[in-house]
Image (cartoon, rainbow over all chains, first blue to last red):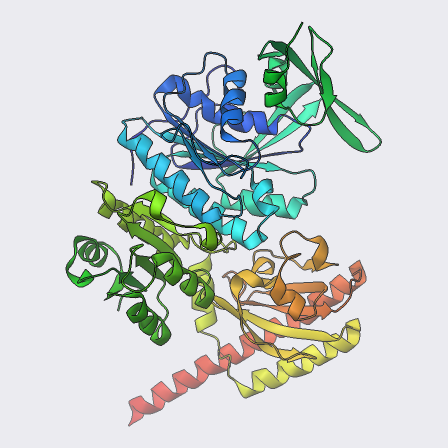
Length: 272
Length: 304
């Protein structure tokens, strides 16, 4: 079933040509790269184009994810942004029209039904197409056998194809073999590999027509520092001892730590 | 004769409903109906369909209970929840890996969507938990043309697998064929294995490649690390070669197994390729003889 939408475009921020409706893309890269940010940006680009956006998250709870999206794209118009919170961290919704809660990320059936339901709500609201991101397949692999996650992906890619949508699957690849990455990529229409070159991010597109070949820099990590709460937060990635670590620091106060971005901490801690 | 089978389950008289009429009119499928979970289970016991469409609220169980049963019988069957029940009522918590497609039957275009998603399940095999070869229809056609029950073929493959196990010093070796939904051992040396769903086998992946698939320790491969079926079979090491008979995608595999991890150097890989060529020759030889016998029978019938 075609929804009659045109190609999915990304504006000047990303080195990508518009992508045909019905396409699903695997966005793959280690956690120390901007693969996750790119996966979100590919979907959030729909905000300027009267398109719907569905974000399914296994690691960042709904409210935090919305904050991250607003930080990634300043001035984000989120009228048609919907979130499936499958972290199990939050119970009940204060915004049931916008955020659906699945109590456990092991409930892949619930995630699939909510993604479908929100997707159909957006189409019924009159959007020109829907972009859907799953963040991330790695989070699903932590609680399900590979064959189950593969089936979820197979169902989703076929649904995206039927409804002329855009599907984005984020895969954090640090602990995965190339065979596993390729198996997921094989059921998608294309793959974007994300790497890091010093402090800048770069991407390479495979399997999609009319896209630039080779590696290209893009601007995700350089969107740091970001204003979060009263802080101006920068991020640095350092490599040493066989490990890569992300460090977050406020440029105006002494708040800083290594590990994951903690939006709640930033918002609840005053800045000088 | 329709290519596929669909079972539609809903309370009342589902046979005379718009979705059933649309599925019958628009798909190359026979569509049967059932008015309860029990009736559906009786139908499933007789013949497993390629896709089951069900309402959530059935007289005797929920649609998810029924679909969980379908998945246990045929894991790659299409499973579609077609219901007007409010999302908040649908309790998925105990059915996390059933993975139904979902269509809200109250939406104006619900029937069109149902037809599209059922077509996906039947033709694109959208509920398979494994990748398919590009030429899956041609592969299955080639497989159907082989004389798998031939006693001389079985005897030749018995000898070859025994020789292979001895040559490579492994406790188990087998020749497998991969059907539409399952994999079966045609012959096995050192093992007696039942058919397995395709999503549970390594050979499902081996037939995607032109060359060997070697996994020195299955526990180190995310695709198979949590696979209970392989663990129950006592397999840690796997080396498989695709059996390509003719131009279509491989119909099966020649496999070596060990119950402990091991390496498989290039010399062994080259030897396995030579064994594989012998196995393929046996399949081709029996296929030619079957074809010649059929031609002879036809000619004799024509003489009478």
